[in-house]
Image: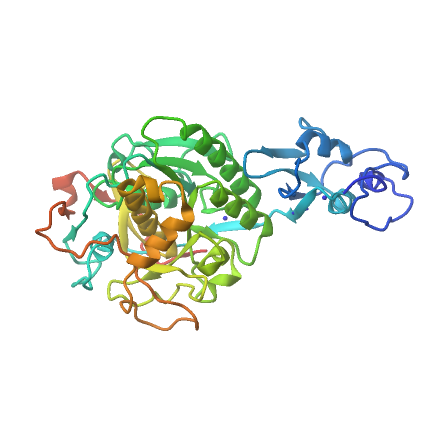
Length: 455
């Protein structure tokens, strides 16, 4: 888990139209064509204003151009933050034509479906934390191994970093979060993670026992439903909330920076979603995204298409415990780094002490999110709010020659690293052991063990 116009077209948003006007950029107000007003219904569209204009238009004023108002039932969201402006509304073709003719409107795009990038598999034990902190391949089997060592140089472990899990929600009461997780945005009144995907992702990024940055803050941004799917409009609304909250949090003591972690994708390219992600990055918000689970070119899907040399966004592919590119992982020039993404154990949403194994680039992405938070807290001045500098550091620390398997030409095949070399005697090295459920009060939840592609 979209565009605008001004004068001769406002009547085109009506139930009766005398003629089909030629769309000319700069016209667009419903005027010389007779009209009965906005006709309710139509498809849902995302409209984004042209942020390059010296003075962006007022949302309410633009709505009046097509005979809508902020309180109209067809208007779903209004965006007015420091990064982008626009709205989401149900509209018919004549309104879309009018909007597309407006010079201050950059994008008008129909809402598209979004799904999480996850595969589900049977219970086992974790290994990802060791791989991102060791120069050596992890020995053993992902589902059978009992204990792994997570090495690190800095025990701040992401303290002061806000990680926004833009997903199915997060079970914030789960004991792995130790009170560091809180509810942020939800596209509906319900804030419960009824799917489990978001809770699992959050645990890998910042959970105790299973996470990389186990002192970072977690914010639940619920944009996907209980089936792990959703709409691009809700996702944009979630990012709008993140940008506003980021700007608020910047003034608070102890704030280091923000990361949007997004383990989902859109089949194809969604310009409005890409624009909003890049706008957030320009505001100093770091972004990590899953490369996708279609075993194809990551550049062909949003948001992974923003990876590579195109921007400061970090796109993540998946490897297994043998350092081989996962059979499902997208590859190519838009993949920046690879991370553990097969048989990953993390927190689960069915109870505060439930854990589960999932596979997918969804699971690889939060490993990188955690590394990003770790590095940000380690050097706030260099990386706290500079996405470009942090991406350069992530790529610099990444292990070359470690990733095996075929990939599309141009893929650098880098393995993410926190910079540690897996020295168990090194100061700051901590041993993380997952023991039997009855010993540690954790247990594998009773979920279907069949592999299910959730993309």
